[in-house]
Amino acid sequence: MDDSRITRRDFVAAMTVLPVVAAIRGAAVDDVLIVDFNDAGVRQGTSRVPKIVKSDAEWRSQLSPISYQITRQHGTERSFTGPYWDLHDRGMFRCICCGTALFTSAAKFDSGTGWPSFWQPIAEENVRHGTPSHGYTESDVTCRRCDAHLGDLFDDGPKPTGLRYCIDSVALRFVKFT
Image: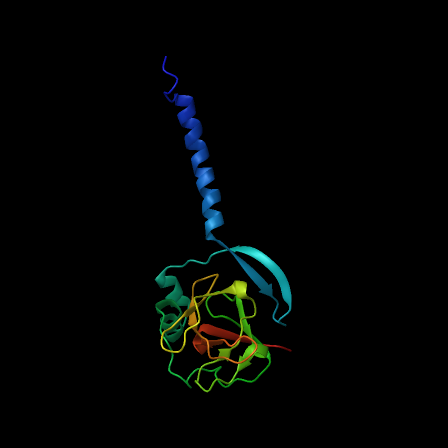
């Protein structure tokens, strides 16, 4: 008998284990590390959470038409039209799609552009972006948990980072600190 042949028992065992291994590997790939904050802006720790993936129909039913266009289709709202560009209240800005904490008012500054601008995110783990642009090209900023397009990153911000996260108001939900 040839020892290189697979027995029926080996085949059944492999078919039983394969879906389990695939599920474990898939879960690890689809999970993201997020820093959690309560609505008072206090860091609650990090947690590994499932990536949020929805169909276009689900996103459309959850979001306003303009929020859908900006966050899911990488649009840009007109400057000086969003509700947060001139907001000076103390609070936190969460993702409109999934609620992940993104920015605080402590890092917000008036860039004169007509969009909310921040010199840093509340936690670098909660956003994803490329290299900051010099203003001529765009460097997308997205929510790490749900891939919502938030705005763009530029290298013309204030100290201490020199960065300007230029974010569309309709991609955010403001939570006022009490």
